[in-house]
Length: 349
DNA sequence: AAGTAATGCAACCGCGCCGCC
DNA sequence: CGGCGGCGCGGTTGCATTACT
Image (cartoon, rainbow, N blue to C red; front, top):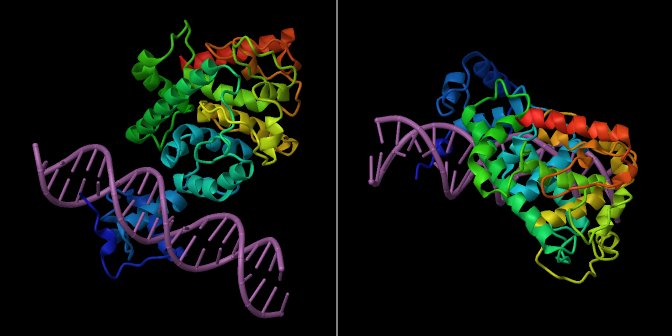
């Protein structure tokens, strides 16, 4: 139903755009806006279909596009969001300002997908290819908890993406999309959430923070059978059966399969291992920029034993404590944590 | 240096959704 | 209410470039 015939017309040019065509399109849109894409090519004097013009504008000519290499921070965000959303590139793109869905899609297909595969992670499910783990923590509740939150977060992100599309805030985006997202999520989804404590911080932060916590190694589940990690890597290791991290990370897949854990949880572990590579850490510190919620995922800045404020704050139902986590825990870092979370609370309220 | 394979990216294509009539 | 037009999304293709033999 409603198939657009615009590209079936004969005489319309296809293939790579010439600088002249770009110039025409740019000039026209700058002067008139794009309006109806179907009518645009004729008005702009282009022998192209409207679809092609739209694509060219969105993916290449738009002034607010950042081109060039993806930062590690962006990579991380893409992976996290992909684990939650799957191939919903447009939704993912709403969280990566200045990146187009097409660019993200291409980057995923050409770089990240392969990289995850090499690590023994299924890029579709974000599980280890062996599906080796029952539960990262050994506690099914934790997996279910995180899974539930991941589902919720997925729905929230979709709603957020829709909101962004609908509100057409392209020209003047809010300084932090999370604010709008929180409003949407809070109004529509709170009924399915686990009990929300007073001064409720949105659960989405917990999911992503959990992720980030694995990455920094400072996150810990509220579970009795886990010891508090004393080093960043300990956390990941604690979550896993013996030796899994190394086995999987180098592509050895001789791990017994228990099944049952949700893909998000697996993604946590694997990415934790991945991002603990020293080679990434240096780069990580150079990529803490941007202004959306992803930036709340502050990295442990190059020091494994340095407390990360983001990870040390109390959480609603995941990381109750972080006693000694990451080797931090001083009064000053406690204050930092407090301030950090106050800022977030201010942001989302 | 030439040929081939691999990689990266821009662009196309088809489908589904949504709003309008 | 159903058909139509338009747009947006995700998958795929094809070409250019780079790496390897």
